[in-house]
Amino acid sequence: MEAFLFSGGRFLDPRLPELRDGIDVLVEGDRVREVSDRPIASQAATRIDLRGRTLMPGLIDAHVHFFLAEVNLASLDGMPLTLLTAKAAAAARRMLMRGFTTVRDAGGSDYGIRTAIEEGLVDGPRVFIAGMPISQTGGHADFRRRTQSDFECSCCSGLAYMSRIADGVPDMLKAVRDELRKGADQIKLMVSGGVASQSDPLESLQFRVDEIEAAVEQATSWGTYVMAHAYSAAAIGRAVDCGVRTIEHGNLIDEPVARRMAARGAYIVPTLVTYECLQRRGPDYGLTPYSLQKNRIVLEAGLRSLELCRAAGVRIGFGTDLLGALQDDQCNEFLIRAQAMPPHEVIQSATIVNAQIVRREGELGELVPGAYADLLVVDGDPYRDLGVLQDQGAHIAGIMKGGRWYKS
Image 1: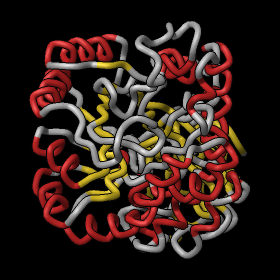
Image 2: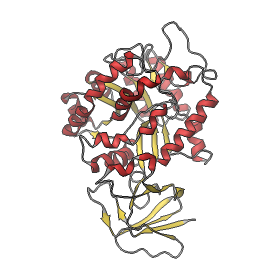
Image 3: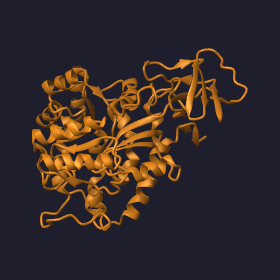
Image 4: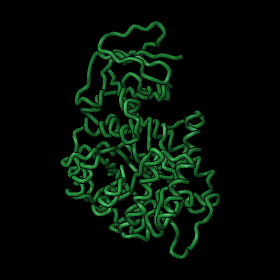
């Protein structure tokens, strides 16, 4: 069993607002064995002198899409799954190299890519998959053209691999059960309109209450939960009242709904960087005027949604939701969040809060005895300068996931 002993640097505990000095960390195999403010003695461990750098837990992104490999989703129509999988594998590796050792894929990834990463065939973060997002007919993930009645088979078009349609409670039960059968770690529903979709109003309410409740009941019975794409306060409130555990995006939330979320213990996962990116770079990739108009609405509301949720006590996760080439802006989410949150809270969102979201408290998001040895060695102090997490990992001297070095 390989072992490493880290000393001589500063230690980032995401539960505290300041770095700590004089902390030794012993890693054995894929786990953290010991964390101490006194020197740790180990004859077997390779000693790593951090030389003043910061040792911190690996980052977690709770809303990514490996398989949404193009900004203009229409480009996926006709793309074979072989090419799509190659693009997804490349995206996974780049996320790991930015310091994200865990991600929650919010739709598209299946057990195949998860297994490939677990078996070391592909370098990437550990991933919690949602399988195919579930949409109503005409909903946010109904990618059919208005002249098209049926989906193409997924073996011929990557776009058909990105969602499934369910209408009515029996359809919903079958869809949820089937995604769980296929290995989904959580279920993803589309309960409002969205930016990228071309046939649904942003403010539309999607799925009936009984359909959402049926999905939540089935997921809960399996021992997992439902995450829901939602923008408007009405859509968020309906979803949370039905038992949805995490709200994705949530830009148009209002104060009463934020208080309801807090009371029910629901999480929100804002993805502010995607709207900034789409407004700035989307036209270069063929984003339609209709999508740009919807994007402006949610972009303008983004920081206000953070302020409302913080004031109400809603637990705020960290997500990005970037598509294709825009994923290289993933770490800009830290800088955008810093306009409404102190840096240590931003890092908490990307570590211990997201560990709670994926139900791996004590194993991910912090370096404590028994946790996975997912860690970063960073040049500088992220609490004082979130810029050290920018530039595609250029300021990260070391990346370890599960006790294995990916950058050293």
